[in-house]
Length: 280
Image 1: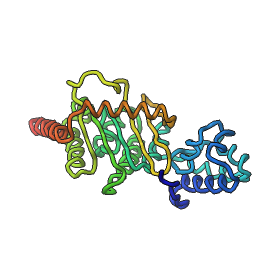
Image 2 (image 1 turned 120 degrees about the vertical axis):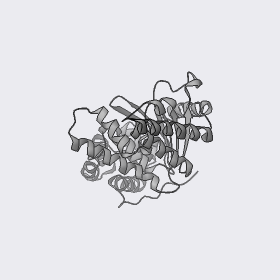
Image 3 (image 1 turned 45 degrees about the vertical axis):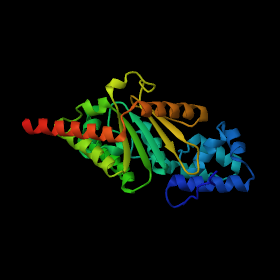
Image 4 (image 1 turned 30 degrees about the vertical axis):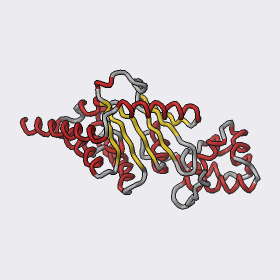
């Protein structure tokens, strides 16, 4: 089993808190399970706080200060974690994505955020918030594109996305936007930066019919599952629950088209959109 991830306290507020939490816990002679007990959380959750893959909440910070005799350190620094460029329901998941070495996602309706183009992201956020001011949409789009820069690294994280065929057929933003969006996904797949498969309509019923699922793995912390609904999002770390979602994802992959066949379909649909746009 790999050892704990070496943290850089200067990298982010979460890394600072994680490094300090690990230092104080070990100095107190406590295991992660020992420290989790008075907080009513699992030892794996403490490990995720130390690894920087989970966001520390204010009540947890106060309890940690008390248990570890930290003289208010965690409460003071926890405030730095509250500010986020992302919607509240996605903020913690976005932070976890930045630490993940592997991201697997089943997307039933939309191109996953990491694979979106600027125009596609704008169309999505405008649909979510039809009356929002333009600068609000601009900020959301900028945050999404910044998150997508995770793919600028040539190898990490490994991203494996299964797109329902509905993602290809739903005309989000119009013909030109869809042509560019699917062309971008195809380009990432051709460059072997991401693995992309399409779950065709012909696959029929499957285990993930009720919604999207994202799985994230980390080098020094337990894996997480992220579930998203209408204006809501939840990170799950219970091993049995995560294992069930991993099975769900594996079965979706088994029903999907091969990467090569999927790429051909994505390129074909992108070309159809581009052709339609030229005819207008």
